[in-house]
Image (cartoon, rainbow over the protein chains, first blue to last red):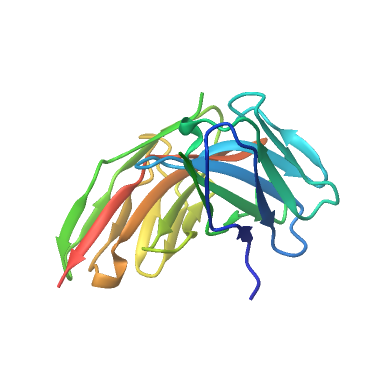
Length: 113
Length: 112
């Protein structure tokens, strides 16, 4: 069946560049989450959408990070002026709603050179 | 804030050995508790969950019991297999605060 799809699976770019990471959630899932996982660590929360609106963006590390979900389905995480410290696996998850199990995509591995 | 602490790995066991991976948490209120598993080359998968005190989650031979008095949710399996080799993450979700808070993960290697 169709799970959470993330593209690209890998992204390598130079410091200072702009990147966009895409997440296509499971059909019908209204809640969408972005997490970041550094090597040897558990995923850390970045931002949560309920429908089109960001219900909680308290995990975004600074204003270089931004995410949108204009039609309540696909979401894009945008990172401006990338830094080497942004290198990590970016995970997306979706669920039917608050309190429901979250289903994760395979992630995008971002490497900033 | 909310946090999860799980035993550090790696853990190496022989096939058919008993497994325990300890997990304790700090949270306000009564969180839901989860174990997620990440097999090599794959994404995170929900293994089991418990939503209230004394609940036992179970799946694929794994079990974990929500212990409010000790704020723990230890993962156990009576007889591990090589195919159980993976990284295991304990996580919580507090009421009214849906994002998951994860532990650092424990890598399990099972050898034949």
